[in-house]
Image (cartoon, rainbow, N blue to C red; front, side, top):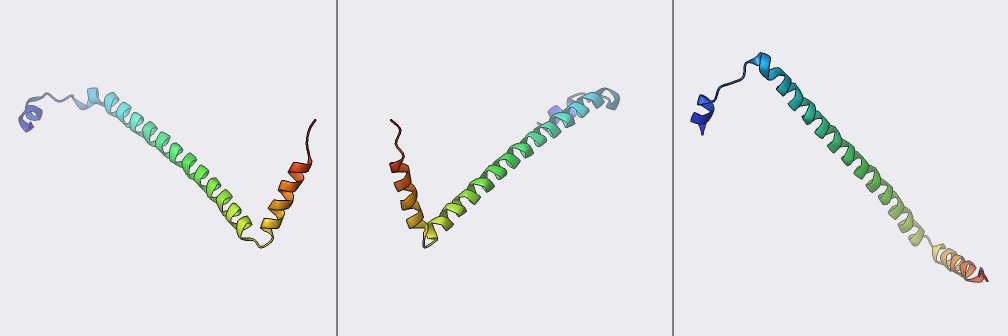
Length: 81
C-alpha cells in the first residue's frame, strides 16, 4: 500500500490549492451543521427537563392533588351542547 502512494504523482501546490480550500470549506460546513443540530437538541432537552421538573414539583406539592381535582371538576362542569 505504501508503494502505491510512493509511485502516485503528487499535484503541485499551485494546482492542489483550490482542492484543499474546497475540502476545508466542506469540513467547516459539516462541522457547523453538526454544532447547530447539537445546539437544537440541547435546547429541546433543556426545555423538556424544565417541564418535567415543574410537573414533578407540582406533583410533590401538598395541595397539588386538590388543585388537580378542582381542575378536573371544573372541566366536567363545562359542557357544550
